[in-house]
Image (cartoon, rainbow, N blue to C red):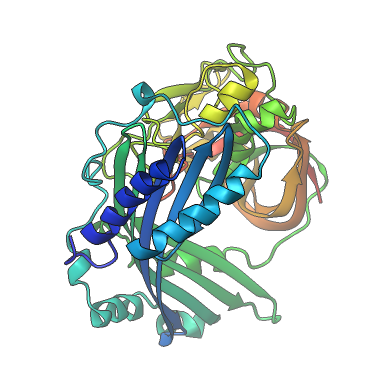
Length: 455
């Protein structure tokens, strides 16, 4: 394993095993150790020239100690066997000073992952990673630049970053858990700034990320970012009121995150969730289904286990509008007196759908969804704002385009959308099939009716 830079070595894994053994020998009742190591290389390009180079390496060992009904978590980046005794002795002494917490425990071994043995089961590791050289990385970063091509057209700044990384984590506990996850990631992102004849500046951003370098669509990012920047020139004011809203697949996950957060046990236990007491109830439209699909090989966000080592599985989160799952780790399960599941949604996938009142279009991408709904506002960016996790009320700044007859008319900026998340999702008209697979939340273009816009 040593020949693969950035991955856990046999010596480091041995330290983790020793940590469990020594902690039990010093009086810990149960122990969980998580060992992680990562490496990232980054090349930044400004206006077609090298601007910065970054090499970041990180490693840590997190130790969860259970003793005398008490619990504590400690971490170190010193992987030295001779220092373990002192580290664990001080950690256990600290735990013993804490108040008892009978709800803290390791997950039942029957629930933990058994198939995450090598860490490569999900095909997220690119074998070519160790052979990549700095010169190759620089050539890719420079080759993606389109600054000279578009400078005569009003492009005044191009900031691009190519990066690749490797992440390796091993989780083991005193109940026999041993699971590993290894993945590589290759990413390129670029922001373009253009100026119109009056001197006003507009920016556009685009990016791609893949577990395998051969799949990275680096050559198209610059052109897409430039097109998105140029499209924003000439924004016009719109009257405040209710509009049909289409949110492109680059930004649609912003509206789902508060929903999945509200299904988490921490929010539910604190009564800080607008989805409290909705398990098994239909609170979303019947044509809406959200799946958790963490086991798909080669896909960003896939993983065989959560931070406790509990085995991931494919399951419905919302099925035909009915809430099917709360996310409950071992601690919250005991605290709330309900069955444990998994600690969080891992790779949410929203199923393509169309409201029964509408005919299914011939295509389900962004343009097809706009044609389906006819007139409205296409949202292509969020500019701050927040949502109330207890009530679901939200207020977000957005930018995008007014469209009529399915065609973009002009850009709009400095507008606000307000409302309630439950109301918004019950006004879902359509979800497309164009989700960006470079994101861990696989959410396509969305369309909603009767959204309040304030200009």
